Amino acid sequence: MHFHVAIEITLRSSILDPQGKATSHALEQLGFDGIDDVRIGKFVELKLQASDADAAEAMATKACQKLLANEVMEDFAIRVTELETA
Image 1 (cartoon, helix red, strand yellow):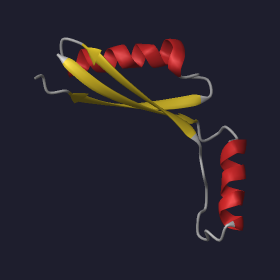
Image 2 (cartoon, rainbow, N blue to C red; image 1 turned 90 degrees about the vertical axis):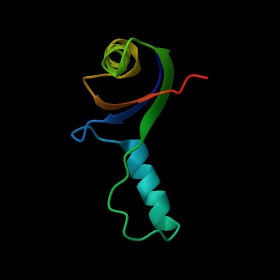
Image 3 (spheres, one colour; image 1 turned 180 degrees about the horizontal axis):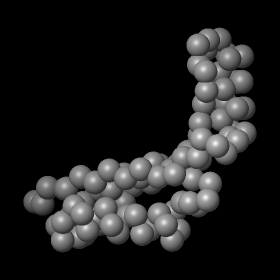
Image 4 (cartoon, rainbow, N blue to C red; image 1 turned 30 degrees about the vertical axis):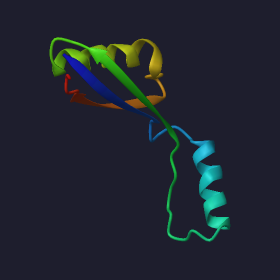
């Protein structure tokens, strides 16, 4: 089976996000009032083959733990969608 995996990687809430702070300040300077906080992260998309959705999620989790995310500083969320085969 073929799957699309979307991974959102963000700094943990306890970690200072200087890029987010700079973006928040710039938005304020541009007149965007009411934005209380900005956090900047990464978005990774994978297309992979696995026996089922659980196996696809397990593969993505392993990729995050080994390479894509720094688990000391970052959290990640995974969404798996089965792709239709032609």
